Amino acid sequence: MLAVKLDRSAGAAELHEQVAAEIRRAIAEGEAHPGDRLPPAVDLAAVAGVNKNTVLRALHLLRDEGLLEFRRGRGVTVVGEPERGAVIQRARDLVAFARQQGYAKDELLAIIARVD
Image 1: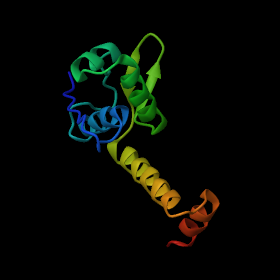
Image 2: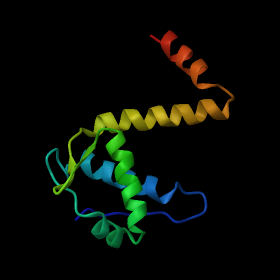
Image 3: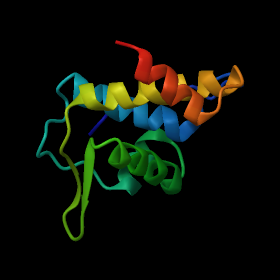
């Protein structure tokens, strides 16, 4: 079972993002390898002390990053490498930072296109 540590303090990231980060860490540290099945969301939620929907939201986030695959009747399987998830997370951070600075999506894409 994956160990999930969450920070519930006021300035911490949202719970689903923390759960996703813990699963990313587990993959990066070799606790879960491509082809491994993750425990059911209900079990992960019980370990983390959060609602099942919070875990499902984290799992969907990781699926969108290409780290997990949902298979009907077979559960959630690790399919990606942690490096891909890290790149996607950094891209999200960049987009959030650009928005804070007043850049639109097309302006950010133009800036990235000029970077060599």
